[in-house]
Length: 252
Length: 174
Picture 1 (cartoon, rainbow over the protein chains, first blue to last red):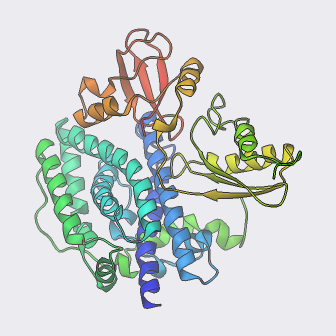
Picture 2 (cartoon, rainbow over the protein chains, first blue to last red):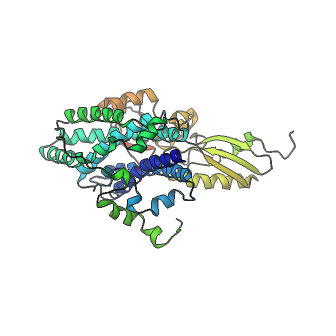
Picture 3 (cartoon, helix red, strand yellow):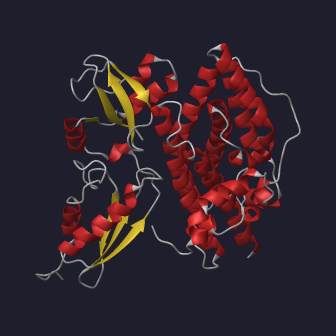
């Protein structure tokens, strides 16, 4: 029972991070700097929504409390969400959106590649499927970091400001708590220190190539995975959940 | 025990070719490799059909499910159990040569062979050879460039031909 509950939490964290980032990216719809980027950002959102649905459906089954993916997405309050803090941060300018995406994609792909050999067959199948898409995401966010960092004085200034601003939200992605620990022991989950190694390697390499300066070590924010969020999440949820809150059980 | 009214699994596979992809109607769900398995149930008029999504967030999957049910109903199968599987993950390698040709004729560049595409991807931004292998569906030239890695649907990217100057959709290698 304990293990099942931990697995539920673990899967929920993955699903919530995908869901909230998807919702954030969806805010760009119709506001992208150019048409192609508008389409790209919303395509990212769509892929992530697909991943969120796989994870949340599985979480709902593991919980066995009669809830489904929609109830998990639309009827929980912010304290029950388990996404990392990074994904709920505001879109800001295009550089901030790209920095957030780059940090997340690098982590996400490293996670999924490891989860592809999970002992849990369902986790493994979702990870294999999602990794194919996330590889494409990372390619693009990497390209943009280099292009903006190595671009004009203005684009470089903004890209540097964006990676500095969001750096404090990256530490949490690699912090192991009791649930992470238990999932590593059972072979289901991922040792986050290994993910951190891969993440740091890629991020450092790209910053070099983009002639950007790696942000200084700083206090790292934490709490998202345990349900303690920044002020932003409540606003995201109020928009995302408004239909189901006002018209419970509404069908599309 | 084959009786006159028995429906064979091969019949169902054949009928599923009548279900087009909602976004790219020149291809059927069989062409795309979306159907992974067919099982006839013991009682007549029932079947289990296993499908896999192309992209995780593909909004066409709901419509595809409905279209499968409607098509089966037309052939006398009222009771369809649809199962979705994720593994093995869908790949454009499952698209037949014939399907690729129809895609090209429709104006969409078919997915390039995997190896060429991967080499292009690895070469990275600003490199010309990332578009190697994608031929313009209008004039056949391989002097093409990516305009956007994301196109009108999740499975396509936007390209431009440098020979005939036509923009076109290309199916992404996946």
